[in-house]
Image (cartoon, rainbow, N blue to C red; front, top):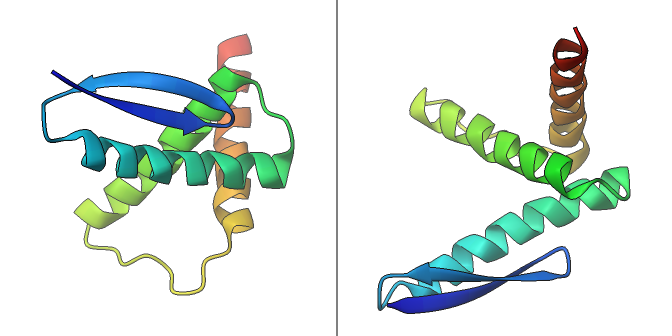
Length: 98
């Protein structure tokens, strides 16, 4: 069984994977780390759980658009994505309090 080491916002995670998939898992981890850094770069310190949810929402939103055949914006700025995610998280928090 292979293992990949991912570093996301300064924390290292050891991920088990199939032999030969280590490089692919590392590249995917780099993508997640870049998105997490974009969020913390724009919003500042974010609790780990919230950062996980926001990063997952960003990826899920892009996946949903890709499945629907919607091309990503050519000149999208990270702040647009992060602002949208922040509104989603705020709404989720409101629903959780209700």
